[in-house]
Image 1 (tube, rainbow, N blue to C red):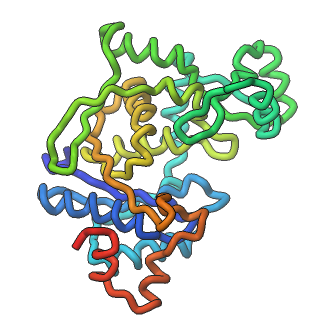
Image 2: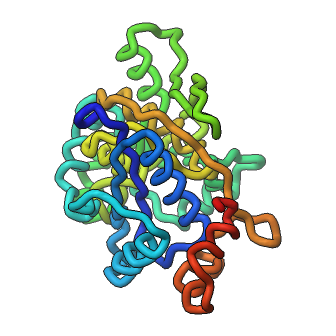
Length: 295
């Protein structure tokens, strides 16, 4: 902990406006930081440079200030730290844990369509069918020379073996510490294998969300990660990456979700009610706090 103080963060992606679910997530971390006399950081996760927009970055700050929140400066933006992610990926690659995948979306869709009862990862995407896992070094070199774009995937079997070796005990389960609503800690057993050979470096940028968030939390000295229950499964993969990269793990708290009238969590993609629209309709900060059960 920097200066011995607990450190929390809120890390939205500037690909849309904040909605009620974001408000709960931001306020949860901020209130815990206040309660524990800790630090609170705002991080802009704009690694998706094709979709990130500066006006959303500005809107995020406006919305959070309207909610009565403050944070330390400067604000970290992922797009300014690509070299750090390249270094982390190179370390994993040097351990023999990453391999190139040239498969297109259509190839992946066609391959999994032919597999009955093919399992999915926690994001409901079909597990990678390992199309290019056994490519020879010559074929890989030829594809690269031809300019074929590729992602780097984690060899999950090798990664799990390496993590157990690093931990010093082949039988040791991968675990992390989670806090419930009262702040009581419990040890949770992670199951990173349910992600399969996950993408660690995207085709278009030098990291995936999973790699970037793990590196950022370590770089910023984040000690407590508060985020929604919809990201609880991601913690399994993040904990594995922390072990492989030798990073100290934060404590996690996966808070409740805000659901719409159909029982679905709010999402940017389905036109969820935004904080800006609520403000413009005349709602007050207190009104929003009541809506999300924080007042």
